[in-house]
Structures are given as structure tokens and as C-alpha cells.
Length: 244
Image (cartoon, rainbow, N blue to C red):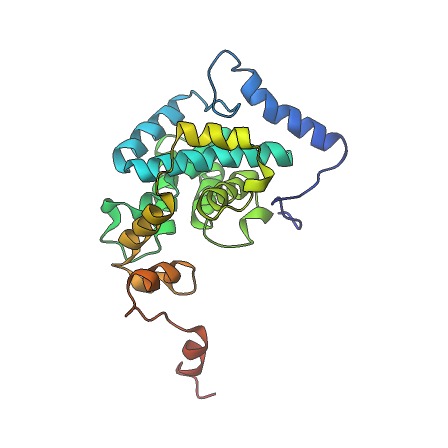
């Protein structure tokens, strides 16, 4: 467990930083003959191919391209910070992180993040991955909309959140090169992304408004539905069954 964040601006010192940086770079150097995106080669493994096919079938272009950008931006931030995630696990977390917004979860009353986290964990366990790896992916997805927590956890968790923050709200864009950003968005374009992702959030959560309590997701429902009333934490305390 970290007591310092792995978020933007973290400095690692000594030989540990050098070893981590070399390990991250070697992931791409060892596939030097393959064409990458912004210098990143997406792992060509049975798991990654199966995840890509599964998410391609489950999500529309908006969410699929967003998820791929989340992975790529996450790797770029990891490289910058000297972090060495398991690329397969990071890919699973990035690709599954928004599946809870899709049609198959329109009957769910839970937070969409938990639906996606459970789906990814089950996907991994069914294919023989161990509980510890599945738990990392679960946490990365479940916490990707929770501010200021993921960056204190393992790279596979922290870098999903970092990729999401960069693609959705622009946090960390200034830390990436213009060339890298251009390469990522050329491979996975984001036309009218701001409006389209907000609409996707609303479509995926409007049937379960109670799940947005205490989260930024309530902002989305209020934006699209002026009659939506967010639950207030102070009111919950003052009106609970305790006499005082």
C-alpha cells in the first residue's frame, strides 16, 4: 500500500526508477517490428485479443475508442512516471471500465462502475487468472470515477484512472507530447466527444438515479433532467432515525 500517490508529478529516485523505466520501455522495444500507437504496442496475447473482440461486440464506437485511448494514455502516463503496470491487466481494466453503461446493464440498480468491475473480474477468473490479478482490475474499474484515491494504489489501478481523467476531463494533457496525443487520437478519434460521452453517461445511469448518490455522476443526471433531485448528505444525517 502506498502512502504517496503515483499520480501526476511523482518522482521516483535512485536505481529503482531506472529499472522501472527500462522495464516499461522494454515492453515496446521487444515488439519493435510491430506498428505501435504513440510508441506503444498493444500486447498481442490471447487475452488481449479476446478482450478486444468482446468489448468490440459489447460497445459502440464511442465507448470502444474511448476505452482504447484510456489504455494508451494510461501507458503514456506510466512511462512518464516510471511505473511498470502489467500491460494485460491494464488493458482489461481500460477496456471494461465503461461496459456498465451499455444496454446489457439497463436493468441494473448498482453503480455502473461496479457492474463493469464485476464483469472484468469474472472474465479473468473464468480464464484462469488468479484472484489477486482480478482484484487489481476490479479496483481499477470500480474506483475510476473516485477522485484522489486510485493514485495511491497499484499501477494497474492508478493508470486506468489517469487515462480516464486525461480523456474525459483533460487532466494530464499538458504532461504528454503533442505528437503522442495526435497519434492516439488519430488511431481512435474523438468527434464531438464531450457531448457524446455525457449522453452515454446519462443513458447508462438515468434508470438508476439512486446509484449516483455521493458521486460526480449526479451532476450528469441533473444536467440532462432539471427535475432530478440529488440526495443531500446533510439531509440524510439530519433526517435519519437517530433522535440526535
